[in-house]
Amino acid sequence: MSITRRIFVKNGALAIVGTAALPAFLTRTVDGAVASEAEDKRLVVIFQRGAADGLNIVVPHGESAYYAVRPSINIPRGAVIDLDGFFGFHPSLAGFESLWKQKHLAVVHAAGSPDPTRSHFDAQDFMESGTPGIKATEDGWLNRCLRSRPDSSAFRAVSLGPSLPRILSGAEPAVAISNINDFGVGGKNSIANTFEAMYEQSVDSVLHGTGQETFEAVKMLKSADPSKYVPLPGANYPRGHFGDSLKQLAQLIKANLGVQVAFADIGGWDHHVNEGNTQGQLANILREFSESLGAFWIDLGDLAEDTIVVTMSEFGRTVRENGNRGTDHGHANVMFVMGGPVRGGKVYGRWPGLDPTQLYEGRDLALTTDFRRVLGEAVEQHLGNKNLNEIFPGFDNQTGKFLHYLG
Image 1 (cartoon, rainbow, N blue to C red):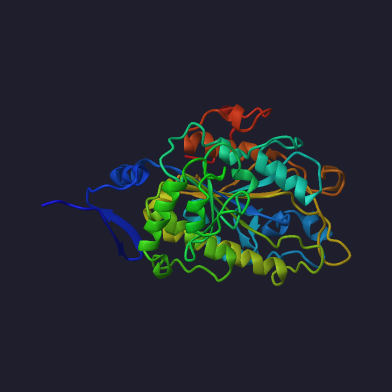
Image 2 (image 1 turned 45 degrees about the vertical axis):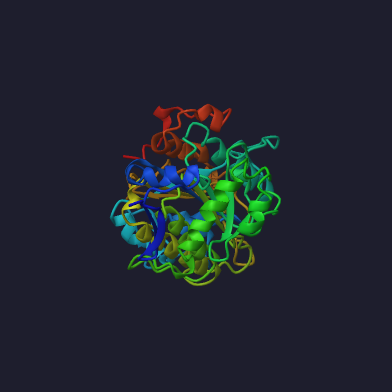
């Protein structure tokens, strides 16, 4: 009796059994599924577009200068979720508290890009290319970090959005998925907007010759009926683009399609006017941000143990609030690192202080940790790519200088 491969849905996840012919990459995915679940490591990068206010996200409530320069938008000590007696979470980050206590979440403060630009466009470009101050870099650092990784899947590099972002542009195959439920897949030039169109346009440079494989992979997802996907109990994604993106990413990861690196972003952090404190614009987006990431962590289940999530924003905000009860473009910021291998429950990086003499250009939080130092540790220690001089050219990213946030 011949045995054929078939696709079926179990608890909303994609599963495959049998031995008949499928495209080569899908055969590799099926045959290596058990091993890959144990051995594959994943890196997820989240970009907070708009320049998030790190000082009101992870609050230095133990420093009196913070309250002196932010009379109307500070987070009162009584409202802060205390972390270590000096730093504390904004109350809207309650979704992070359990992760912190479980030591799966770490904070890196006074971190970011050393480039002095206050331009959103330039700063984002520099952080996605991994070469601050250099506009001529053609590819993104997240694409470059794939060079020494096995090319196991058309879905090994995924962006949740309508087009491929700067950070994933380059020679390595990568795809942008705007909505799994609609099977809308976009490329560098927004040519392939549906899976049928993507198949027809498989010569598009974004797919780099993987058009047929990607087409077959999307057909597999269609067979699984992703619209009926049910997250694990407790994974309560909030409504909105970011929550939807992370839910779809969890679905892709759990479908054993070989995701190695992934990217998602969340906008709305540019609060020049009426930023708010415990309530308001920042509080609302922080709630969406933390609840989405918290749900993603739960939804991954055991796969979270081999997953690292790193967050970043192009720069921080001014230390002093402005006349419109907001903050203007600043310099250093805060980064989060979440994952199974993370030595969490700790704030990493040297705190520069908020005294006027300690500020960058007399107005901003000074930078003490280059964002490439944080990312480099994840790339080398977690993904196993030790070619950091190629991924972050011109930056001295020696292992001995890592923050050692990974166990």
